[in-house]
Length: 175
Image 1 (cartoon, rainbow, N blue to C red):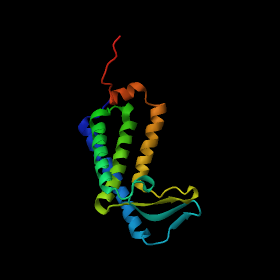
Image 2 (image 1 turned 45 degrees about the vertical axis):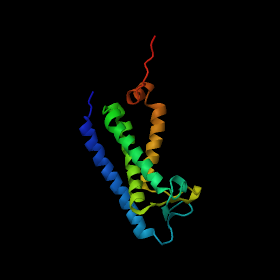
Image 3 (image 1 turned 90 degrees about the vertical axis):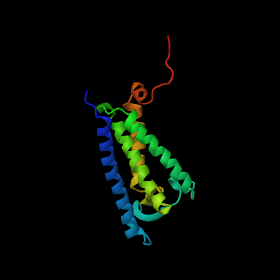
Image 4 (image 1 turned 180 degrees about the vertical axis):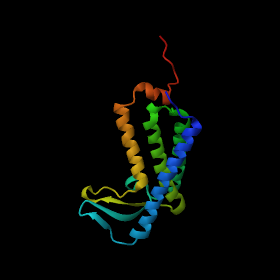
């Protein structure tokens, strides 16, 4: 069974995360340049449009104005994700999806962290008018896809023994 060393995983994760974060920041920059102060760009009438929003809260605008809280929370989450990715999640092929999930969560968190750190708000611009879904961005897509994959794979692919390898129990049962 082939595995990837911690250094190999770290470099791959750093490379992919960097690309994903750059894509997120590029799309946000384009949104600022082409959408800020403009009417929404309708891509599909009554279904989907590009609309500029400065989100000063979390998902759905919750906890608006609590930037220090978000910066601290995100820093802790990023440290946990790096630890899980580099130390706890095996580099074996079976755990490829779990590694992808960690990179997606990390990239999404860093993408929005950069916005909060630099400008005290997150740039959002995708809007599903059909269901009046809150406006979101590329980093949010990374986090949502990672969460969806984690749920699906947790239910149908990974077994209890797989999770035990990542999160070993502190107490061992004795017979």
